[in-house]
Length: 193
Image (cartoon, rainbow, N blue to C red):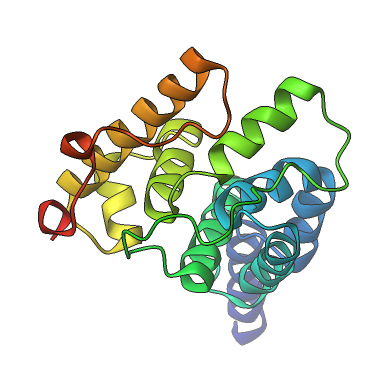
């Protein structure tokens, strides 16, 4: 009787364990989607070296983190990159660009249009860049972005609108250096807080 109960418990435990992503699952995701995940990290971090740090650290976070269902592992990997990038960059200040040389996809084979788009996104102010990548490119809701960025959903909506205006202005003028909006259209810290 005890042996049968032990077998049943063991088989249930193995069945439950097979539902969770393992180290090998995350390694496979990061190996198969290296370019996509690196691009995500690059767009968020706006610097190739920091993007590499973010990517490698995120793999470690996935492997060492809480168990997650196998079918959630890909989305969890993206979320891990976002969370690590947020911790690394602390983008919640509404500062302007720190460096004037935006990333262009260092080491990646890109068309001129793709390189220009990467430069355009990485040239955005940090908070707007994070919101743009998370909400527009990755499809996160305002609520999810707000929870990850620890800010009100209204700040996310305003920053997304601001980023879209900057991108539209850049596209209209065909000038990658044009990001300045008239003062009345700039976000202020009071609106975000």
